[in-house]
Image 1 (cartoon, rainbow over the protein chains, first blue to last red):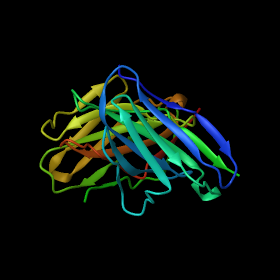
Image 2: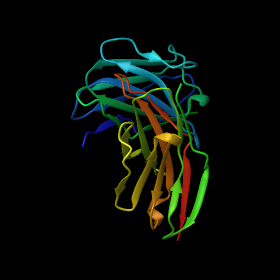
Image 3: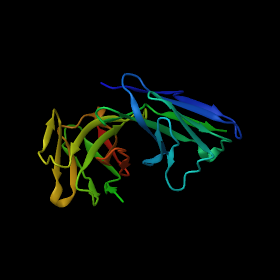
Length: 115
Length: 115
């Protein structure tokens, strides 16, 4: 089946630094990728929709200058958390939508801890 | 806007018991997809099923079965003869069937199967 990878799987960073998370579709092309955030014991909330070659679309309440998204190719989208703070600590999950079948596949997630 | 409700926050059952997880959704869309995902403690989402709104046929896969009733906007999930490995958080989810298939997740039901 289709595989989506995320790197890193977990990261610890200091407050004020930036962290980049990669989302790759390994065996299919994804025109569209999505980024979700999940706080402990809560559900997944969509943060933004990432489209290859164009600007991302952010959900209401998500700061676009804080969460920079780049979808530079049909297999890679990156999420950069800029000037991270402890409240950004969360589980970030991406999904990639197959450009052919439109089926969506989720990555394994990245656990971010900001100290 | 779409909404997915999972009224059961936590359920505990004894191994080998059957358990049904409820899911009710709200939408004005005529075509859409419904999903169930399993999230074990590791955090990675495990895809269980995707159901097109046109297909109301119930489905069985091993110990898992799903009951989709469009008339009541429900998509319930039953585990037969539960096992300890079934312990996880289960999410019901909804997506539109258009180009950008944003997924809206329910709040999740934590299932604990006691040996």
